[in-house]
Amino acid sequence: MEDLAAEVLQGSVRAMARIITLVENQDPRAFEFLGSIYPHTGRAYVLGITGSPGTGKSTLTDKIISVLRRQGHTVGVVAVDPSSPFTGGALLGDRIRMQRAAGDPDVFIRSMATRGNLGGLARTTADVIKIMDGFGKDWVIVETVGVGQDEVEIAKTADTTVVVLAPGLGDTVQSMKAGVMEIADLYVINKADRSGADSLVTEVRVRVEQDSHIKEADWQAPVLKTVAVEDQGTEPLLEAIENHRSFLEKSGRLEKVRREKTRQETLSLLTEEISCNILEKILGDGQFDDLIDDIVAHRKDPYTSVKEIVGTIFPEEQ
Amino acid sequence: MEDLAAEVLQGSVRAMARIITLVENQDPRAFEFLGSIYPHTGRAYVLGITGSPGTGKSTLTDKIISVLRRQGHTVGVVAVDPSSPFTGGALLGDRIRMQRAAGDPDVFIRSMATRGNLGGLARTTADVIKIMDGFGKDWVIVETVGVGQDEVEIAKTADTTVVVLAPGLGDTVQSMKAGVMEIADLYVINKADRSGADSLVTEVRVRVEQDSHIKEADWQAPVLKTVAVEDQGTEPLLEAIENHRSFLEKSGRLEKVRREKTRQETLSLLTEEISCNILEKILGDGQFDDLIDDIVAHRKDPYTSVKEIVGTIFPEEQ
Image 1 (cartoon, rainbow over the protein chains, first blue to last red):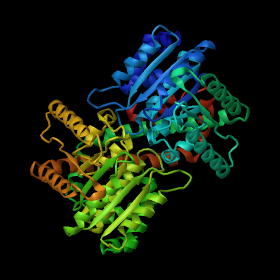
Image 2 (image 1 turned 90 degrees about the vertical axis):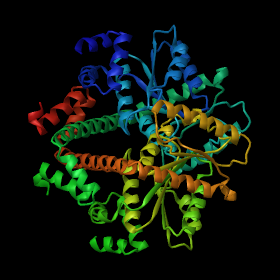
Image 3 (image 1 turned 90 degrees about the horizontal axis):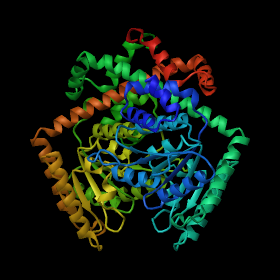
Image 4 (image 1 turned 45 degrees about the vertical axis):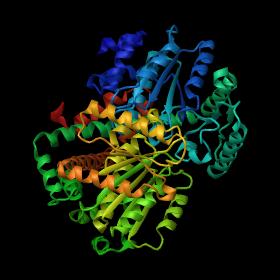
């Protein structure tokens, strides 16, 4: 495992891909590896790009990668795609994206399956970002689909989050409710050559202004227009992203936010590990199955039973 | 708290509403209450209705409620709505739904805000279903928006899940990928008077058949057409739901699935309680903050640190 860590730090793409697979499979060895790579992380700038299907988010990501590459930066991309439990992974997505990245060894793109339980995806995504960061990527782009609670959690791992909307998709202020306002540092109205683009821009701007007043925020998310397929507006978008980065750095916000992220990540790591340990014990001796039988038969209730178990583990708490 | 439980069991709507608020706010007293109401649960049939915004899912739910009421059943509805962190709740949704239910004391409708952390929503929803169940509702309908991982988790609390699609929304087989096939016991193509409805029906049927072969399933989800605004197709839908219910009951599946649900719910209750206890301890003495400082400064890594903490709690595991 230490060899693999060394290989990653030396820039082996094959080693990095293998480690990511271990992380995705929740292999216990991944934990050890993440520990040894951690001192080399914290250098990459993490850019989140989120939007509904059909907004042209992937094309936009592609153009952003091109600009970053022209500026001499190395780029890692984590694409979080919903995937069928039957295909077992984002195969089509992988293929399209791999084609796009083919021939450029300094762009590493990884599609993540969204299988697995709640919360697990955000954790795995954060780990994969750390691997790319430790690998030496200057930028890590996290592309997420949609605006569910999962995506909001994942977006929180980004330093700057771009929310991509497009006219004609029902992407109105109404659909922006689900936590999007909370995570957006920048809005992009893509497909801005389509009708309805300008009114969408206005609508979003009005909403952003209202919210800035409510939150008394010192950052007001700009609303930009792009036509990603024609590479229009990509450079101004990168400038806006750099502006936000400067704002975060100069205001001390970046440091503060990253500390809070570290705290949250460590906490969830801790609860997860502790839960695993306790569950192994409890599930080990068959008593838990007996308890479930009693609960199913309504002889016991889960709430009191759980309090009792916790009471035996932490006797002084009761 | 016991008085409140007694009031709920005696049918006080006000008491039920108060308890649900306690559950939503994760008030510790709710735990006690849930324990005392648990013996009276397990009688309601839980129907999940899920679909993207614009499919007419709420109107359909409304019509289903009418049929159930005509059949003499009492109904509880849990509407899980995405909500802005700024409005602090699904206010508009509440108002619309409350109007609809006004005048019928045997329909209790509750909108749930989707604020709160990952996983919490599924847990709270399960608790609210239990409260309505213990209150004596014959049917509890859980209405969820969209098809994210959260919704999939929530849908798993239902006995029968209806997935609502509509033509012209981009609701194609492609968009069905994210776990929907996994949860759908029945499909409804609503707004079936619109163009594209028949081809959507065919598309979904083909997909369902393919999946049935792959899974060697003994239940093949029927695909029904409705025009909810005109109350067309509601009665056949209810019949299809009853068919599924009979299938579950006769095959012994209902019992098996409910046992597995009880097991999962108890497990997550347990891990959550244990985590809370441990976190209280660890966060209490300020040492955790020192650790975060070390991790932020990259003097320590979170992975090894977590292993060390877990090692002190479970010395024999190391």
